Length: 298
Ligand SMILES: Nc1ncnc2c1ncn2[C@@H]1O[C@H](COP(=O)(O)OP(=O)(O)OP(=O)(O)O)[C@@H](O)[C@H]1O
Image (cartoon, rainbow, N blue to C red; front, side, top):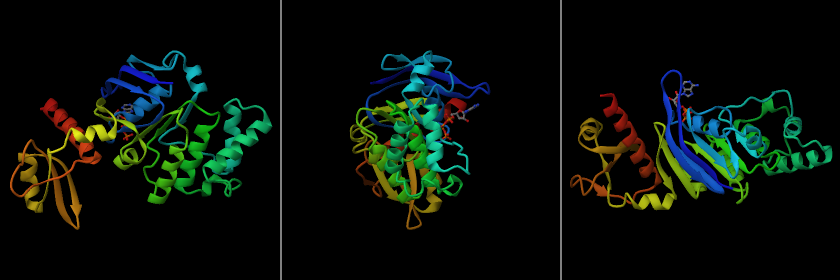
């Protein structure tokens, strides 16, 4: 099955253009949708999940026209939204059983088997009888993915699931996603570059409602080779550097700012060339978007 998004656009009533002609083709496996806050990721995810309508464009999943055949899409969809509520007094087992009924798994034996398997898969078997109000953030996210996986969906959408998780829980969660299955289309929306690097064979960068890049992580890195330059700078120099050069990122290393600059050829003797990584690609595209937006506003 393949998800095909064509020329999708959405402008909210307040005038924000959240999606500007988005085109994406997403096949089976893990697909990362990477973008900063406000890029339009949730708008895109909610549109694919049939929770809101775009102004224009089309979305197809296999032979399903997602925008008009919403019930058909919902029958094959598992969706973990960015924020979701759980009845705090209920146990994970009771909640999963409840959602399984909603998903149409009416046979009690079949339901019990599937709920038990998902509790096991998400490492919640030991805590299955506990009220979820007492769960940690990571446990709640794992329960969320268990709910999304009920009914063996063909299309799984997870919207920023690792934000706020500690490193152990984050890895546990990513491993869970990696195990969903090769024949399922899984879309992971995130602003964390590491999530994509660790998990996704294909990804897209979205910023200011536009797809800036789509493809394989290793393919995109090559395009920046020889053009990323690194330098440790004094804090007082930062402003000047940012005015003169295309500084794509500033990180602190042992308290001192280290900048990465995009430049054809060396920007100066104090700079050293570095092998680009996915983070450089990401910052290159999103700073380009920010510069574009700034010049648009000017
Ligand atoms: N219901 C709404 N009404 C008006 N503007 C909205 C609405 N939902 C989102 N927006 C705006 O649309 C833009 C895209 O938002 P969206 O939530 O899709 O981005 P995002 O990439 O998911 O960001 P975040 O990671 O912050 O959730 C933002 O500028 C946001 O403020």
